[in-house]
Structure formats: C-alpha cells, structure tokens
Image (cartoon, rainbow, N blue to C red; front, side, top):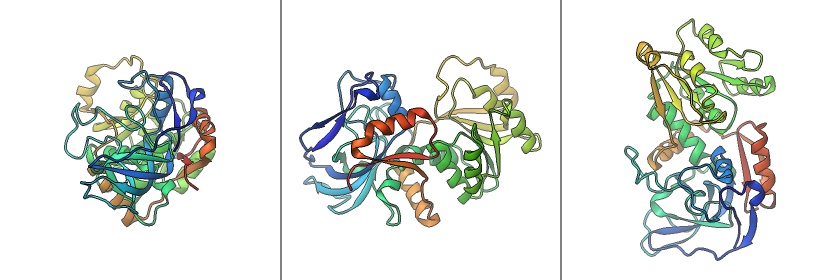
Length: 339
C-alpha cells in the first residue's frame, strides 16, 4: 500500500511517499481502508521533533483518520467488515480517569497513523461514525472533537447558560463553538481576523474579540460579562496568553489548558491569584474512547457538521502541512486518502 512516512525532527519537508506492506490485523485488530485523515497542531510538533516520548524512527504520521473496515482479526467482536469507523486518540484509554499506561501511545506519533491507504487499530479503539457524517467530517473528531467534548462537558462540567471563552478559530475552538451553541452555552471567541470572527458569529458566537486591535482582550471579556468573567476558558495559546486567560475567568472558574501555540516556555504566575480567585488550571490531553462515543451520540442528535477549512488530495499532503503551518485556516484541514 502507499503511505507517507516521516521521521520526527525532519520537518514536513521530510515527508516521503513509499510503498509499504499492507498491515495484517492481529486477532483483536481491524484493518481500515482510510478514506480521510486530518491534521492537528501536534502533527507539526511531531514533524519538528518536540512531541512527547518520540523515537528516532520514521512512521506513518497523522493521528486522525476515518474509513471502512475491510478485514478483522479472528477474535474481533466489536465491529465487522463494511462498518464506517474512526478511532480514539489514545488506543489504550477506553474509559475512566487517565494514567500513564492509558496515555502512553498515540496514533501517528508512537505507532503508525492514518496517512496511508489503510491502517490497523485494536477493536477497542474504534468508534462507529454516524451515518450523516462524511468520512472527511468524521476524520476531524478523534483529537479536536474529543478534546472539545472533554473540556466543555467532562472535565469542565458546563451546564446550559454557562459562558465559555474560546481562543482562535482552529480545529478545537471551532468544534467547541459548535458544541457550545448546541448545548445552550454562551460563547465568546477571539481571533486576529475580522473575517474569521464574522464566520464565528454565523456559527453561534455571542460575542467576538479581535485580539490585534484589542490586545488587552481579557478586559473586554470582563466588560462583556458584566465584570464577572467566563465560567471556562479553553486555553490554546500557551505561555503568551495564560495570564490573560486567568484574568478573563470568573472566581471559581476553570482555565482548561489544551495547547501552546505561542510556546510552552516559563509563564510567571502568582499562586495567590489562583487562591484568591478560587480558580482551577486544568490540563487537558484529548480524552477517552468513551468520550468520543458520547460526542458521536451528541452529534447524531444535533446534526452538527464539523467545519472543514480545506481538503487536500493524498498526493498534496505536504501542502496540507504548509497550510496548517501558515495558520490561516478556519476549522480543520483534511487530506482525502481514498477518492
């Protein structure tokens, strides 16, 4: 089969299209014909060589994929050939609280991922796709969708009427906006682009802030919330935005730290600010298969369609990486593997 391979640290220019053996499923594994795969920021981190616990060996990249089961191992009971599936981000985290064992391995960084004509996964890691979703739409959900679901409703525990602050218009923020709107939450979103903010309003954002023209955007968040602050901030910026995120969050609220687009360097924080504000910093690293299944159920009821910024052909995979690096996307970037 044809597959892209990449060694961590080589950058996206190191992507190589190769012919490799089609994997054979072990007794509890399934073989999936890949129809679509999507990119996440962590795929750029893998390419740079600064993701978690990487080995110095090439593998098939991308942790998000969706397709059709075409073969199953002898002991598989959870699915059958012909099923439309995606897979959970962590193949070992099925349910319950995370631990080092459950989160030790991810597709496309520690084991072969989805940027190939087919991939294998343990049957416990696969999740059926709602019939109304296309493969391209479903391929956006394993990482960004599960992260948004966990942040808002599992770890965040938000209820209808709560207010959430979303940073930027990338994959997690946009699916979080769609979920928030469908669940009766109020959403405020930031971006450096007025055009993107207008699109966010069309998806249900109650208020928008251009952080270039309003650099002290935390003050605007407080103004928009009558001085109270938001119940939860989905923090994707990292060291460059964390202090402002804390200031924008209400007393007793939560800042969910899910990314570091501005870097993961030292961020001076005064512990008294957390104590005085009774605020919670919560690290989020995607979520379990059970969370992905709950997300799929919610999507099926709400009929939300994930926003895809652009789709690239399989032979355009390097261009998809460059498009992600440019940071001009709105929503998710998808690579069509099968026509």
